Structure formats: structure tokens, C-alpha cells
Length: 287
Image (cartoon, rainbow, N blue to C red; front, side, top):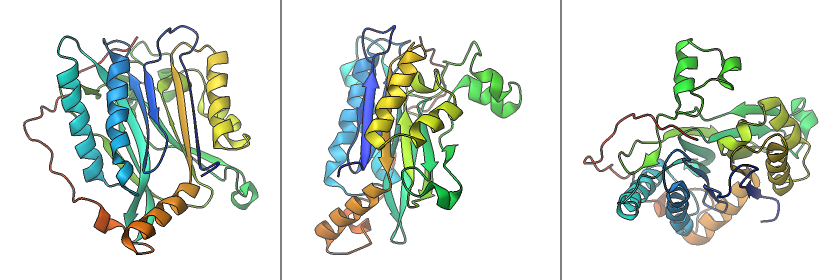
């Protein structure tokens, strides 16, 4: 699976503890950013990643599987952090199937982000160069202000409430992630990152570094290094996944089911959420 994905992380220049955790490997890729404004952010992010690592028996994923994983992670947080408050963002991507066709399934809770770069390391000329797009939408006060028109996007980077998030995986409530399902195209790359990257580099800088890197691992390392050089005020984590993972997932599906396309038989049905979980929209300051 050489060059199918890459990952890099750094505690940055101001932090002594890295509260970010990540998972890079089929069937799901995850970045979790433990909230610095809470105690035990590093524990919270590691619990989230550990729960997603338990999906290794599957080749592809679906929202029901992801929702169930969030429930298990939330339960562990409540059991593990009874003497403190902990929380984490969670942003992830995996391959799912719709009518036998592969799609990216992106999910997000918090302000870690998912981006897609088209034309990377493939044939840029075929698309007139690379194209970067942000897939996820931040769960943050500033994003709400942008959506309402109260704040211009260009001013968001320096807004005093830019680190206040409105949803997270934490001990007091269990909000649900947002989902996006995107057709997989040849040459696609998906990046997951903590806000330590986007606080230091704008989209143009991210695209320039990403598009000119040798492969996903090189891109992840270069992006993290550039963010640290630009200031490194927070932990920085980057995971990059290429469309090559679809081939690996399909091969695993064929091996486990004896079919070349439809893997739905190996997935559990969508799991009903525990209605006893509280769903609120508190504000979580980050430091």
C-alpha cells in the first residue's frame, strides 16, 4: 500500500504535550484534536482513535458504523474521565458503497477539517491543474457568524472567538457528526487536519505545498513542517488519503465476500442512536 496514504504530526513550538491523535489505515482514517481548553484532551483524542481502530475487520464503512463508534467512544470518555472534563474533535474519511459504486464518506465533529485535492500526483493537465476544496464545515462560533453574514470569511482567521467550537465528542453530551458522501474520482486525495495547520497556513499555501509534494507521506510531512515554521502555536496533524485506497478496499471486499463490488453484506445495518444520550450545543473554548 505504498503511497496510498501518509500522516505526520508535531506538538508544535508552544506545546509540550501533543493532544492530537490520528489513525491512518483501512477502512477509516481519523484526526482527533483533544481540546486544549479542557483537561485530559490527549486522553480524549486517543480514546476516539482507539475506538475507530476497532473497525479494522471491515473493508468499507457506513454512517451507522460510524455513529456506533462515536457512541462507544463517548461512553468510554464518561467512564475514564469521571474526575475531569475531556473532549476532542473528530474528523474522518473512509470508503463506502452506494449501488456498488465507491464513494468517500467524510464525517466531522468540531473544527478539524477535511479537504479534497483533485488532480494531485496524477495528470494535472487533464483538469487544468489542481483544485482544492474544503469539504467539512466547522462546528464553531465563527462559522455560525460567517453563515449569518455577521462576519466576513477573511476576518474569521483573527476573530477573538475563532477557537470556540459548538460541537465536540466529550463527557457531557454526545452530538452527532455531519456526513458528506462524494464520488471517488481518479487522482482524488483527501486531507484530514487539526486546526494547528489551518491556523498557520491559508488554503492557497496548503494547496501549493500539497500539489507539489512527491507523494502523500511527503505532503503530510511538508505541511506539518510548514505550519510549525509559520508559528507552530498549536499541535499540528495531517493525514492524506488517495483514491488508491479504493482498490485495496475493493480487493478486501472481494476476498471476504467473493464479490467484486457489493460489500453491503459485510456491514451491519445503520445503528439506532441511544436516545438516552443528551444532545446539546454548548460552547467549548480552546486554548
